[in-house]
Each structure stands twice: as structure tokens, then as C-alpha cells.
Length: 275
Image (cartoon, rainbow, N blue to C red; front, side, top):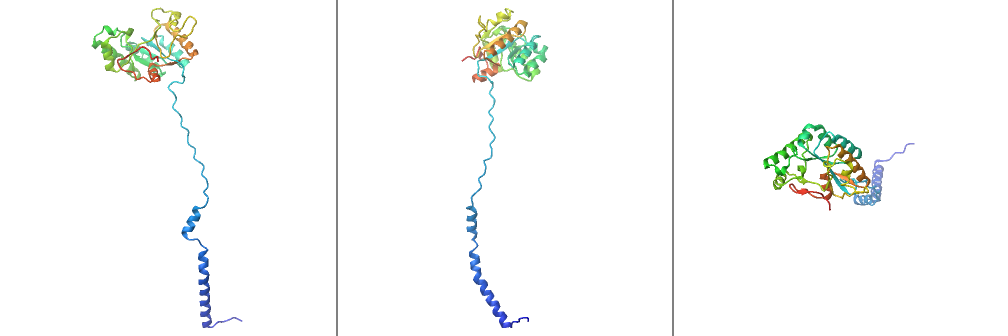
């Protein structure tokens, strides 16, 4: 039988239910942490340690020259000649750089060899246009000889020669002043092989090795040769092989200045860069 309640009973039951609900609500609210407590609880959770991000190692710049042995600059004058390419082949096979003091007139005749010299990592220097004794020339002629040779090198290789070697090593105050104006340090030599005088391989070698074949070349020396004689090419190849075997390192003239941390001064004369 379905139970029925009077209106008064229903009203009474409604108020009893509301009272019970109001009694239970504070306890339910207390069970929930306030917002600040919830945030504090969240922050108090142990953090997961993060692995450090790997840092790419810093690669040092390569040294100018890979060896620390005695440094020497091998230089050749008066080319390019028909014999220069045989020398270039030998230097390339041994990974040896050199400095070529070229004549503008020869660069004009053999521009492909001058371009090859630069392309293979060697250095070109100014040896004037026509190999005249500058100490006997007027200021105008001196300037022309340097300028014409510079332009021949620049037009062929897109590189301006950094140093000057006057023919025969002949100079005076006027030559120095014009070299200074044009920005050229003057590079002479400390070892003259005199390969032009006695075109004999053993005679050439005697200027760099003693009777027992031991090198007399010192660190910082500048060796003078001429790549216009076949005997010079032969002697140069022997010289390179012997000095490499003795622990020497070949560099260009400009590299020798860098190694010595010397800023070359235009117009100043340098025979060597020994310490």
C-alpha cells in the first residue's frame, strides 16, 4: 500500500534534510585544502632532476703552421721561367710553400705559371719589371719598375705583392723611400746560394750544409735561389728533402713574420728573422 504524507509532514521532512546538509558541509569543506595550501603542496613536491644539456666543444683554430721545428723561408728570384713548373711539381709533392720574387716582364710572358704559383699556396713578391739596378735609376724609373711589376702580378693573380726584393739587393735611400711610399718592406736574404755564379748542385748545397751533410741553416733564415736554372731546381729539391728530414718547416716570407709576431715595416730592410 502506497504511503502518503500530509503537507505538514512534508514540510517538516524538508527542514530536517536542510539541517542535516548544513551540518555536513563544514566538515566537507575542511577536508579540501585552501588555494594557498594547495599551491604550497604543489611546490613541495620533489622536482624531477633535469639532465644538463650537452654543450658543443669549442674547436680551437688551427695553428698557422703544424710544426714547431726550425722555420725557414725558401725564396726564388727572376721567374717565372720554363723551369719553374718542375719546381712547383716538387714543392707540391712535398707540401712545401715558397716565396717567388717575380719579374713583371716574366709574369706577362708566363701568366699561367704565376697564377699557378698563387693557386698552390705560394707567395709572390715584387722583383721589379725589368730587373734593373734600382740604385742607379731615377726616382721616376724606380717607381715605374715597382708599379709595372705590381700591376702585372695584380692583373694576373688578383693579389697585390706584399714585399719587395730589389734586383741584386741593390738599393739606396731613394729606393727605401719609394718602397715606404708604396707599402713594401724590403726583403733581402741571410743565405745566398750563389746558384747564378756556379751552376753546380754540390756548390749550391755547400751554402746550406757542411761537408757531412748537416744543415747550417738557422731558424728564421731566408734562402736566396733563382728558379731560372735547372741546376737550381735540382739543388732546391735536395735542400727541401734534407731540411724536412732534419725537422725544419718551410714557410713563406709573410708567414715567417707572423710566426715571429713581427709587423713588417714598409721601407725597412730585412735579411732574416732569426731571434
